[in-house]
Length: 423
Image 1 (cartoon, one colour):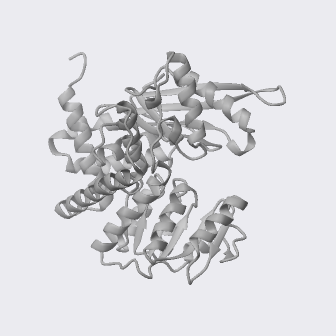
Image 2 (cartoon, one colour):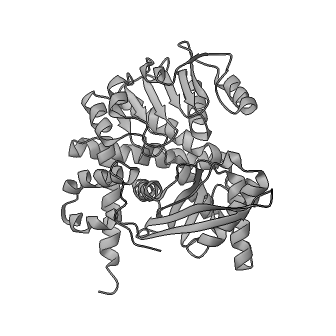
Image 3 (cartoon, helix red, strand yellow):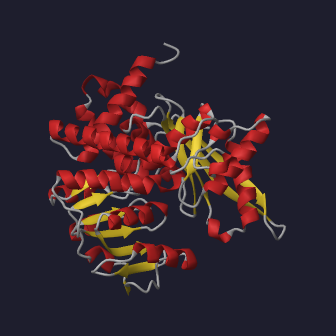
């Protein structure tokens, strides 16, 4: 394990995060002296994950678990299986989780994990072996009071079930609270799978009302059509908005009159992508950024809104369903153009909020109905949006900066009041 403050990459996700922290420093007053706390992960673990493949060969994969800050509670953050996973990315994602949990005022710190692998290239048995070996390698730093993983890109409830079982085997008893996003019958929470997309909709609905953008007839474009993008699109369609363009790993589809999201979900289940959907035409991935839209939902990977794309974007409102989808310079361009951005640390926090509910239910062994969960989620998300909106108004800054002001104040106050051991 190492205490890292620098990764040699000039334009990576970690550098974007550091620049965001620097921007908020002038607003932190007496807490500013503690700001270096936010610029260093508390703990970073790199592990070798060897597994026996189905053909009998042995392959090695590189895995990570980073705990960025634990001042406000145990680490919280997903596990990502993707070919592009590296330490720079995982560090940034863990840091954004620190900001996100604090912005929502959840009693967690930030963490993140991942393995550099294309999960689609593995059989189900290979995926299980990979997950269980990875869990055994990081098992000494995770736990319901230490660090609680969850699903992310390339992982799902089944993967969480394998992690829970592997960890529990080492403890000698069932520990449901070691992960969230599990299958419901293993202690998972109702509403968890749809929570992030629901949060995107709730925050979007609130901010659209504040900027006087009617949802009825609004043109919505979505990048990424997994759990987050599809649920957000469904809820916006229910609110009478038109889903005019969708882009995923298979291509880009467009229909200026709006798409039937229910039919699209059926197509997705059969074809594993939006390409070929009969209710729309195919356009180039580059043309996606030229589509006339009122609301844009980036719900894929980080680093999608570049300076060039920010200049093209016709949206009035950007809802960051993905983590870190906007480069800092692009963020400035959107602000200059009068485009309102609801930042990832608020917009996509529905997932971690219901993960918190799941953790609480596991600790109490008492479970709520989906209606109860949705009501609690909506209440917390609306409160967070209102707090951030008011802070942005009071400080005359963007919603992103306002969210960071609130979050950093909470984190650094906890750091200050806990003190430094030994003194």
